[in-house]
Length: 193
Image (tube, rainbow, N blue to C red; front, side, top):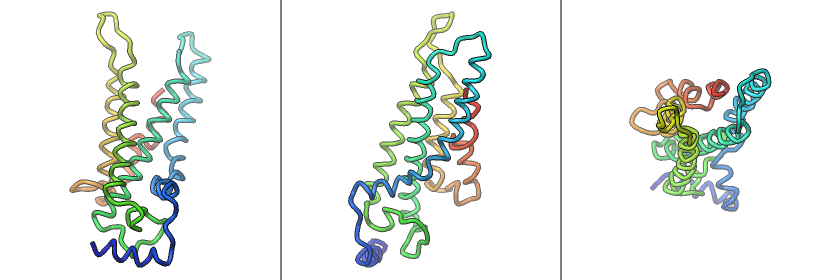
């Protein structure tokens, strides 16, 4: 592809970082505050509510840790898929301004970046399933299901792909901010508790 050839010319001036650093740059960990901050607020609200309530709230720390892990994985998966989709769609080319994108620079192949995104999102799905099916039975001896959590998990994973991927990327048609806030990367998680 001509994109990769042009990127290789640029890379001759800038050496390729070590593989661990390439993955770190691609994952963009500096964006994690967007997913962690609302959870910190939500955790403190839940703690305050739990201390003033007579109803016990078992496993608050465990559930909070699972939500933090879920949100971090969604954020990292979204970042990697964004790197992949922007390169494939031609939005990230040799004229890109801003932070280096691993796929655009030729440091990772599109398949590697898409694979990394898939791993993070599958791990998020595994945690989301545990949150949606807490392992308890109701009075009718039926398995408890948290439908709100199922909605959050599925919409988060959908938005990870739809933000810059698919035939109508939300980020390209003016729904990017709505997608980010709705997908669990915004204030929604404050109210989960």
